[in-house]
Length: 474
Image 1 (cartoon, helix red, strand yellow):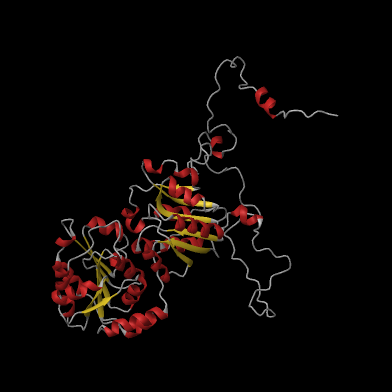
Image 2: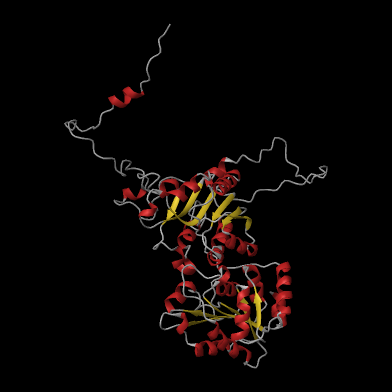
């Protein structure tokens, strides 16, 4: 009977010499460096490594300095974008309307080509912030849909942020879970984690600045690719260990980036791949349903204004959570006394236009009647979808730096935007010079309350009633 022998792996490791240079046995082994494989990089043949390949997450592998430039990635399994999943035909003999799947068809299995290409069939986006931040995230969703055809996108956002996605045709499910809650209820935390695990996502994107805790939350979702922002300071230490790709914003407030606050994520999603060119970044666009438009049309008709003959006024000073302001601009609401002067100029233009104030809370009803006038038209609207429909049927918008400015430009409506400074205007409306329909009026003192009202009055004079045929085409 032969006795079992010990594995030779230990002996092999101990017998391996630490150095091949004679006379260097007494020296300590040199620390491991990134250039242990000198023949792998094409740039080394020219004397210097290539700077075009982006270094991967250093927390995952500190010795990985990018893809192998000598390897041919354009093989059979990795060429071009992914294709949409074919839909099996419906089974006419099934009383429940099920599809007719082939024999031994297993939809939970994926092909080897899909794995090699890195296809994304299901994606989840954890979006931090309120209405303004979620509206600007539409560009990321559209780019994700263009880059990965046929992908199913789900969104996890706060209760206010979820309301935005009734205007987005690219989202399948929108779940309410506030990622900004620092102390969530254990039941809500585990339930949301279970929902994300049960959907088997290929990619999860997060816009919340992650420390170790939030990075662990994304890691436990079991997604193949976990991508997100991390804190640019010491709070982000160790978060990259649980993420596939991470981005560091310049400040601890991501909203300071304004319109391009998700620029790093957009560039990463649109990066060129194996047989896929650089994906262009799409502009901001929103869509509205006919049912929602009918509801809003009934509302503003009862408020006493006609379609195409009113100007939306948005951004009155309020402490309501429905003011739709950005986290990157705290000084973006104007007192009613100054709005009253602007509204008087709109109604006295002689072209039949009337101002329509949007109230974020019912408590402002008496204030509007006392300060602006009892004959003033006002409407209580808190959802971004109804606000978009209201803007779409208007002759124009005059607003401060709230979500109404971005929604008006997304629907190509004339807009007069009021900002506290020119720097804020350049950050939140970098495309204003290209759009002739958008006029910016900025304060010279850095405070919105000191804005030149006469300049605003001159700007609102350009509003004209919208023709009926133009409104019918929208």
